[in-house]
Amino acid sequence: MRLTSGERREQIITEAIQIIHETGFSSLSIRELASRVGISEPAIYRHFKNKDDIIMGILNKMQEFGELIQQKLISVEGELEKIRQLFLLQLAYFEENQAMTTIMLSEEVFHLNEKLKHKLALITNSRYRMLMDLIKSAQAKKIIIDEDADNLALIIMGTVRVIIFQWKLQDFRFSLVQRGKSVVNMLLAMLTVKK
Image (cartoon, rainbow, N blue to C red; front, side):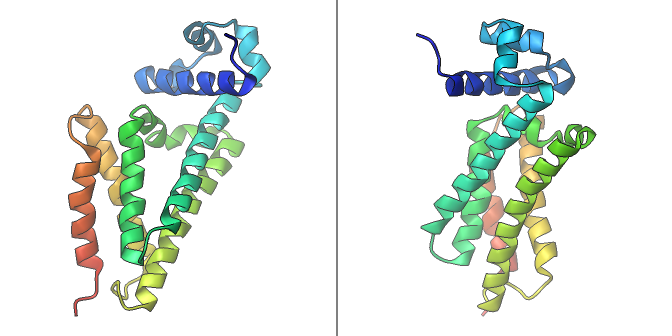
């Protein structure tokens, strides 16, 4: 059965992510990718202009996940619970998509291409703004301490990144979500206004 163009693009992106995860960005080649997907090199170029276009496809996948988070948070009640879910949904995504950890932790690669750098900034800023809005709303309701919202967002986002980094360094040997639950509960306890 032949794959649709969209299915083939998805297959190429998935294999590219796996190659990057296993051997790094420098090992991603059209030849290796075509071999893994089981198609010719010219067939790759029917779906993507070049390697940077494939990486843009990976970033689009990350952006789609950010949009999914926003949709999921709509039905969550209360700012603290939304912050908790934002934290945990990101960890759950990486736990289910281990290979994406390498992409997330390799942002320096994107700085070589302005389009990729801009796309990564849009994705990062979107999640950051989402978190900032939740923090500011919680502060307005006197739920979260009245400290600089930007600093609080940095602490939370940085914590997500460090947990994922530790998880990858330890060869994914612990549950990212379980670890995240205890950490986010502690973080929110520290940030919550004491009554």
